[in-house]
Length: 229
Image (cartoon, rainbow, N blue to C red; front, side):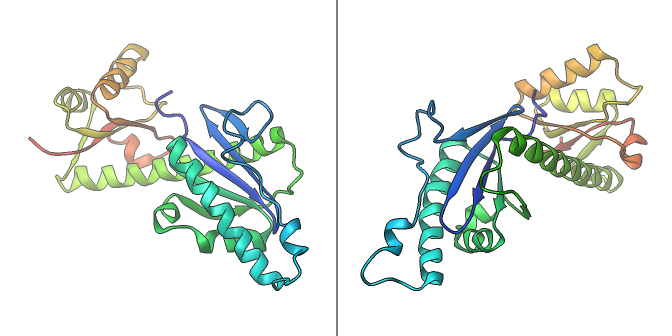
């Protein structure tokens, strides 16, 4: 469970409508669904009334205004849920406007690739698309962390590898991120669970790293360190 995808917010948008979803622990929930207690706070927005005003703005301004309103709701949702990932899906024009209006802080958790989804896509279909997308993100991030660990170990920096050195570093509270190859022969289930328990009790992150040859050569176990002793 510690290596489940971080909480993500998904915004499916077109130029006059938005649907928000929150995904965590493999579940995807639509915000503003009938049973959602936050529905009044994070409501869907529509532009119909704006387009009927006597002094009609041009369509580009309408779209930009709508995008700013959506960003406000979206960033409130991100703050409320503590989301670490933001995925935007839907219409290309609307997605670009949304991206351009995000705050610098939100830009940091945005995945720039836009999922091509229709506004009327059923929730379960969105869940499957998002699951595959998050798995790709997770795989890339895990490999990036493993690359960083290999470099730290070879450069005698903030990295440790091997079962016993990693266990000791965890016990010392040194480990920022514990990395484990789930296919390594150097850990049985009991030893793996012991390392993960240590990670949980010391506030370390956990990454499962698959199919990384250089990390596997380090016994498939290691940790990125907060500090050295």
